[in-house]
Image 1 (tube, rainbow, N blue to C red):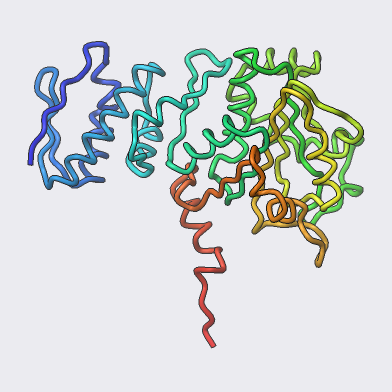
Image 2 (cartoon, rainbow, N blue to C red):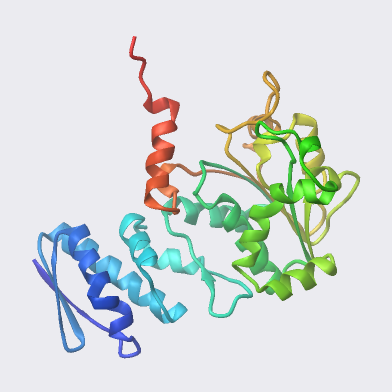
Amino acid sequence: MEVTIQLEPIHNQVELFGPADAHLRLLRKSFGVQITARNENLHIKGQAENVNAAAEALDKMQKHLIRHGSIDKKDVELFIEHRISDGDKKTSEALTVYAQKKVIEPSTAGQLKYIETMLNNDVTFCIGPAGTGKTYLAVSVAVSMLKKKQIRRIILARPAVEAGEKLGFLPGDLQAKVNPYLRPLFDALGDMMDFTQVRKFTELDIIEIIPLAFMRGRTLNDSVIICDEAQNTSPLQMLMVLTRLGLGSKMIITGDITQVDLAKGQKSGMVEAIEKLRNIKGIGYVELDQQDIVRHKLVQKIVQAYDPRNNTNSE
């Protein structure tokens, strides 16, 4: 089978094809097809299923290049490894943020469902392993809503629960002690707006990045409230968080329930809340899995290797 793809005139072919045609070579190797360029056309030849898959990846590459003005090897790998069956539906959930020419889009079907669930519900629970975009996409939705003036504030909170270390033994004051726990939230924000804007918004309390305990006694209106690493909340802490939800607000609760750092025998508040609340209208639930991991491709294999469901006894 052979198909011909016409390149958009706006495209810089060098950018699309990659340095020394590296992107095309990656497509050829991944899909087992022949790809040749003639003038403004690309010809793809091979088995029908592989040709169609390569053509779909190239279409996404072209759309990405139009929106972002550039494309790199990492982007191409994502289009190859994480295919979404309905590409048009995927682009309809693109999230605009403050960073110039930056658009956040889901890379997998699971991530697409996650974004849709957050937009359509006032409370969303999301569980999944490292690298699936739980925190990043939650922050993306919050920043996009702030930019559109659909909310007035973003509150990002994490429980300061030690993973084998004790806060009291760390150097510095309280802020210095909790900053490492909040760093992933700063990192996500830093990808969506520049440092000056993050600092301005935090000084004006438009964005708050706080330990979970700082939410006690508050009612948060017209806000997106994100509780990250929520598997490490106690049942009472989780109830406290859930009852902070005010008028015009959304709450997104994320965590990996396979990585609980609570004291042995203590039940996770997130696990209990999902059991009690997941069938209530207006509360959404999403479970991401290994197929939704979008970090380095080895992360997916590492998570799979550590999954107890994949381990067998050798007795």
